[in-house]
Image (cartoon, rainbow, N blue to C red; front, side, top):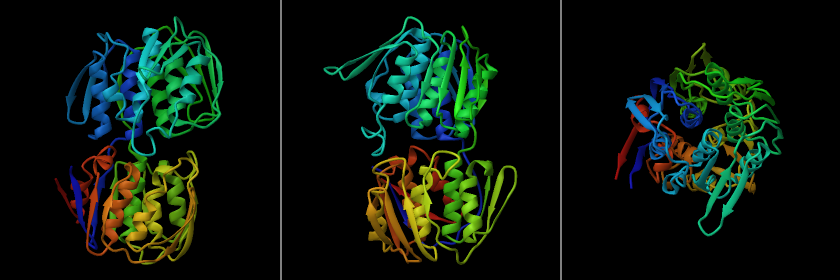
Length: 421
């Protein structure tokens, strides 16, 4: 299995382009099922989860044509309404295929979606099931086969309140309700930029969605929608991770092809703690900052501090002046990686499963690490770049799921990261 070997304390500088958003492309691919016309998707990140999603389309009978970071999807000849379990169990976003298949064909069979340690088993699909039932679907679960079977002769618009704010839940019900009869009102919705981008695309194809990006979304059902071209928005989590990496390593790095407004919560913290940077409409210039203050964070749904930036930020705080409280409110298990930072020399106190106190600044020393999940994997890379010595990171499959050729791109900035089997 491949692993990264990182030689720390290397001077970094230069420019890096941000790739398309993982959390956007994994929703627009299944949306292709809603229409019998071809959709063209550009700025696709070349990551593991994208490849799985496209493979799932093909397993259903869809035709995918690839040309680098562009793909054309033709679902007109889809003849299968069952998600292959060997594919669906490998990534969490497979759940996003359920709604479009149900809306177009009236039934769908699937097994419980998989993912990394914070996704597999620990993130239930109750909100999806409840939402489909609210739209008039009948849900059955076969324990012997481990399959869900959902049927609906015709989906009917409804009022649905999310008991927990959910990005994927909001997106799934929004795209499913597009072909439902009548009006659907979704309340307590997530407000992430990826949701607004998805709604804008659907509206350009004939859907009638209003309120995307706010807590209340209204969908007027239509009989059919067309397809068109979708450019995947910049990955705000990658942009934030690179900004944190630059600040943590005291580096001059220009981040291009990003949207600074999408990481305003992080940039606001940079302003408070003394991190120097400039920004434009689609770029951020990180500047060297020798010393900066510690600052605690509490993860929150957008536009709050993203849970996906929590682990890189925690590594960042090991280099700050003072103590910071890191409070993870979104996912269980997301702080498991801090033990590895402690082994590297970080001064971290675990308060409970959701809170840790980081005392800094501390020197980090190279260790053999294992990437427990996608975002903690990126945190391990940042830790390896800061640390003295040669850090080894195993299970980098988790990192490749969400960051396109991150080793090659960081090496162009001066990092020394070797990918070996």
